[in-house]
Image (tube, rainbow, N blue to C red):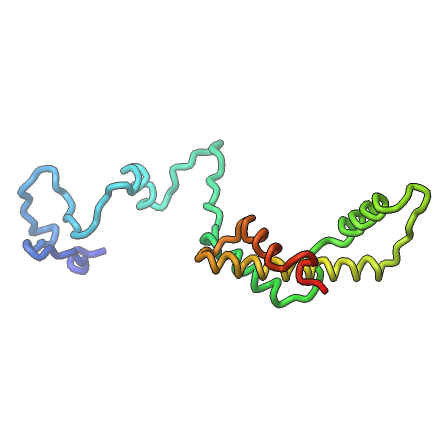
Length: 172
């Protein structure tokens, strides 16, 4: 680039002259200073030279530098998840673990000589009712937390919601 086309940063106090006409007042200052720029915390001088020349200072055999993994701000994914689950009507609990739990409870409630066989619609109806109960409980729990001027639900909120509901938990 020709010296006549070069643009220089201007300081409000001092006018900078082109390189051919510049008079150096200091022996160490060979480049013009830029106002508002600081090199504190920007890395080593070797890294700046390598970046300026277009080459990296990674040698053959060095591990490949990994990019910083993208992270969402706290609470963003929770709000995204809430919106997703409010749009859907499908069941939230997995079917097989819920089915195993129902069968296990049925075994503890009956004598050991009797075995129950379950229709899939019966287990699905139980799962629908259980999830509706839990969703309603968490809605009331959230209201208790908001009443206490909090946004985080706690165990005491669930206990208060169940106590207010009564013996049958709002059912019946």
